[in-house]
Image 1 (cartoon, helix red, strand yellow):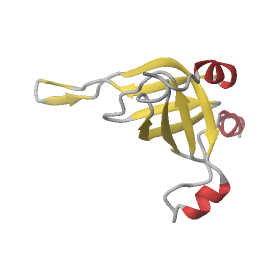
Image 2 (tube, helix red, strand yellow):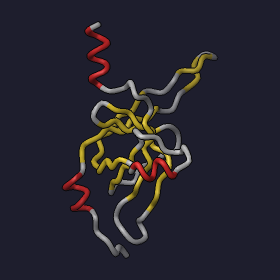
Image 3 (cartoon, one colour):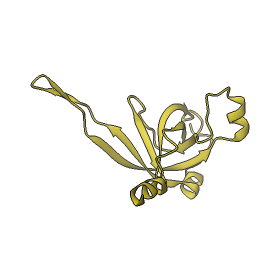
Length: 126
């Protein structure tokens, strides 16, 4: 039984993102080939982790990390990346609230400070 319905709230503040995961690799003639990248569209709210939480985490959270809140469950086995506004995040920990609500929260750790679209444009202009 769902006690709290956050679907409308997430739809209101949600943004479109991409989930990128690597497909299963395979062996061919004794040589390993990586799997193809699989991209899927997903909607959810991207919420920055508060400065106080970053400071109290003892270094486990960084300034660029955030939380991704969505009504769609995401299988985080393997490496799953979230791409939002040209920034790439690795989805790690998840909190499942499906017993009492209709959403899941995933910790999204920033992969690189140099992965933004604007920094790529500056590099190509140089």
